[in-house]
Image 1 (cartoon, rainbow, N blue to C red):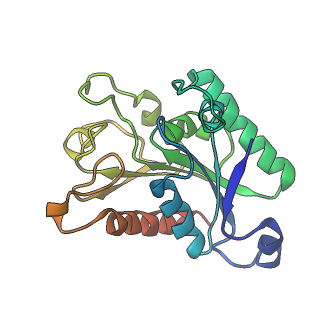
Image 2 (cartoon, one colour):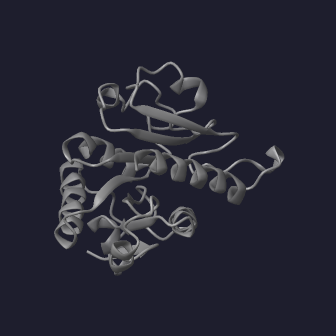
Length: 219
């Protein structure tokens, strides 16, 4: 499994062990339909790296197969995705047993991370647009496990996200361990409309700063 790593290397981390920004490695998975190196994923990984954070990205096997010329298959079933998440964590811990990890990702990647967070011994969870329900099907909630989540969690959510808008999510019963940071006029990729007066870069910069503060608080 290929990993994309932004920010301090392990050797640089060892040399800078006294700094607060390098104490937690953030591991991110992609969304259901796009790979780990989209503009969105690049912006968050590179933006956090510029703040001294170490960010590791990986692709689920179904997406890696697409990259190597395979057919555009749908995401693997949940047990397979969770097993792949666990394999990534095991690999990183094998490389450096002292690592403190936070996990998360875009949409599907973040949702899968949320399902293993409490049992994985991670310091935190970061969801970049959580799919609370399928678009147009608000009755089909994916929130049951979020009610009892114990891992400190940050969810960045666009307030007009069709997978869970501000108006919808405010009525959900969510664990007190979850912080919600709303991006004004953001969609599922946190992107506002032109008429809002902001562009994607500005909205993503706000999100990057929120993630950085969250990781700082975990340190």
